[in-house]
Image 1 (cartoon, one colour):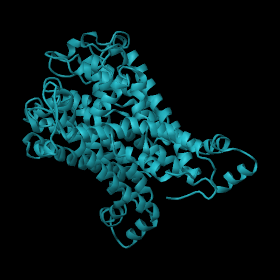
Image 2 (spheres, chains in turn purple, orange):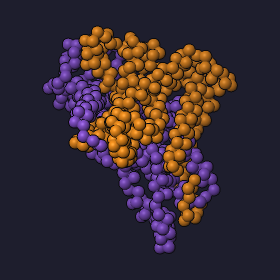
Image 3 (cartoon, chains in turn blue, purple):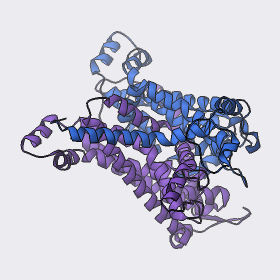
Image 4 (cartoon, one colour):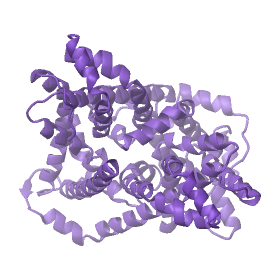
Amino acid sequence: MVERRPFLTVLTHLTLILGVAFVALPVWIAFVASTHGAHDFISGLMPLWPGDQMVKNYWQVLSQGESTAGAPPIGLMLFNSSVMALGIAVGKIAVSLLSAFAIVYFRFPFRIAAFWVIFLTLMLPVEVRILPTFEVAASLGLLNSYSGLILPLIASATATFLFRQVFLTIPEELAEASRIDGAGPMKFFRDILIPLSRTNIAALFVILFIYGWNQYLWPLLVTTDASHYTAVMGIQRMVAVPDSEPLWHLIMATAILAMLPPVLVILVMQRLFVRGLIEQEK
Amino acid sequence: MQDKRVSFKGLWLPAALLAPQLAITAVFFLWPASQAIYQSVLRQDAFGLSVKFVGLENFADLIVDPSYLNSVKVTLVFSAATTVLAMGLALLFAVAADRVLRGATVYKTLVIWPYAVAPVLAGVLWWLMFNPTIGVLAYALSYLGMDWNHLLSGSHAMTLIVVAAAWKQISYNFVFFIAGLQSIPRSMLEAGAIDGAGPVKRFFTITLPLLSPTTFFLIVVNLVYAFFDTFGIVHATTTGGPGQATNILVYKVYSDGFIGLNLGSSAAQSVILMVFVMVLTVIQFRYIERRVHY
């Protein structure tokens, strides 16, 4: 603030409160919907205050799911989402660390070519090559499996570029010193590079966990069997019930549970999250 | 490309280090992309029994296909509206959050968290709010004399997906606008104040021009987001309807390929989208390179 202007200060707070309300409103409504019984929605107007069916609804989606829509218990879907999110985050970081190390610290033929091949993946989001990617996954027998959910999303140019930038800022003297001390490349990688990029790894992990958790189209395609549904895509099966009103209270309980883990990650690790988000785009 | 002065020797080790990334890239990125290009010049009959080479006919058909042209138009409207709404609100909140002294951290936290909500969930949340029979907003709108029904009205359905898509993207833009605002030197704003410029004038003559790199970067990111990441919103709420009113390009690739089984046309649409992403990525990278050397 440059000068005191009480009126402007009030206006600023008002804007922010409205903003926070706008951001929170849909989630509040969803939460309210998830705490009412099915009959509360027939009357025509959505209640605005939580009801008394919260424990019952959440217990039902966690243990049984919405069986009429063919969705498995959300407990299983949350587990699948966790496996997928962790697999993608860990896998991407591992793969990118290794290839960034190779590109920055080694001189070998086709180095520039390898760099450009990796760069190309940046331009091909899964949405634009759905059908052929699905065919590859199908012919490799990856449908309805965790590796099918994880592997195709592991290659990432952004993570490789991020680690390349990080490695480029690490002083040359460290590599010289470790060479003089007789450390091989892998020892240098493990004992110097990894510890020095610890914060970057953690920040990227937060972003990638959310990215993996929120995947929608790819799980939708590779899982035809309910046992591998993830939470975020499973919700579509509950929404798309033909010829009947959706079971709002169960759908919204599922939605709240499906968004809870990544939201908690952001709230708990906000500093790392903001850092990861901004670093990733550099 | 920047280089390290000291480097390790060897050929097999770097090859082994690069192998996982290159293998995944080849199997899941390059091969499918080349398949898409290959299929885009073929035409299959309805039963998949015969395939014939048709050259660029699939592309030629698309250019004159009214439903494709409609999809292009819908996508442009959707992505422009989403980008403007998401960036406008984010900038407003960021300027406000940058100005307050008390409670800035709390406000920031409360605006940031929707980043974690998947687009499809954002769609479902707003779908409930706008539901014609029980939705809170639909009820409020009926008080204002508006008969809301996104199942019948194309413009209502479009509004629904724009609001849902923008709502989810505000947090992302907010983070970058805050970072951009913090990098503006205080002394410049103070100099403006001493010269007699009020807050509004300072915003338009100092803050906004200095934010332009951030703004430009966010426009590209938001366009990519609106084009590709919003598939879930459309798929879970409007499924491209009513009519073709919300049939955005990404959704059309999916529905023509997986539901309509029109492989050649779907592949041709994929190729067009790939070219589009490449153009956007190159623009983004040229810009980032410039910023780095700046």
